[in-house]
Image (cartoon, rainbow, N blue to C red; front, side, top):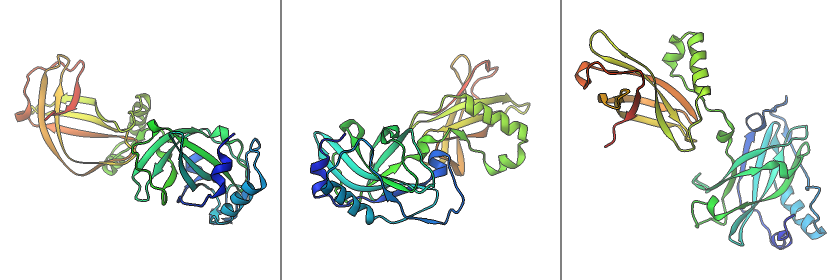
Length: 297
């Protein structure tokens, strides 16, 4: 399967770090005895035809691995090398469940020791085959040039990690005060709205208008969905905001100070903004359609 495997294993030493996630997060499977220590056994893919020397090297490397706890799936980085314009990452894929598992497409991140992302690639783990219970299987993950963000790839203390966030559905993130004040019916309506919308693209942050109302006192009250497609939470201290009506004309604009405001990774957070009448720029706006957007500097 990997014609260069023989040359790779000859002087192979473990230079990578380990990444471990819960089986519940990754494949939705969990067993009892979560604190139970599991020593994995070495497993080779049925299609691998390896010589005794190669098997000895993998067995030696495997014996050096730390045990897992029950309900963990791990990537243990072994070797990183550059071949034919690729960065080829060898790692053990480890399963501490008491059952055979299979995985589908999962995005992997190639990381520096400090967490800096060096590259990312979606991997079809079905090619790995069935991973036996309590086992570790060596595999080689090729990263093409387009998968990498830098040419400066470290030769030690790197990590191959599951991007669990990429598997999670985009979900509703409610502020604690909203959580307390909203009825279950209103919460479910918001969840349905978030679920019905297209998921933001990776690294995308956008705004979507939800409700708009001109108050009797002349203020404009809008509720906006703040949509975070990033893998990390976003902190917002200030938000310069403008509201446009169906004609595309600016109805109101102003800046809002937000204290300790966070939109969690891969979530949508609703928030209400009140434009005082002094910020209103247009009378009798047409709100048959409208949008909210950050003020462009």
